[in-house]
Image (tube, rainbow, N blue to C red):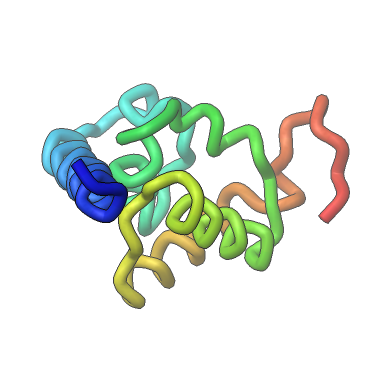
Length: 114
């Protein structure tokens, strides 16, 4: 399998996994079903996209600025094989992360620097 074909197959699996996670979590009604992600518009999308590859708890531990979240998403797409988000989904995810998991919401053991 060529590198390009392998990359396309991997991206397809990431997107398919995210779609599966969105479909299976759409009816979740407990905060426990979201591995600690706080309620809010965009939580389903963040959970479906992020938890398709790693624990959502990893996301809750970051506490980043909007700019740092945007850079993290770009890095996940460019370096980790995450499928690129359309503009609307990207905005929704960034709005959620920057509102609910920003610098002011870092766990106590994480240094509060941008």
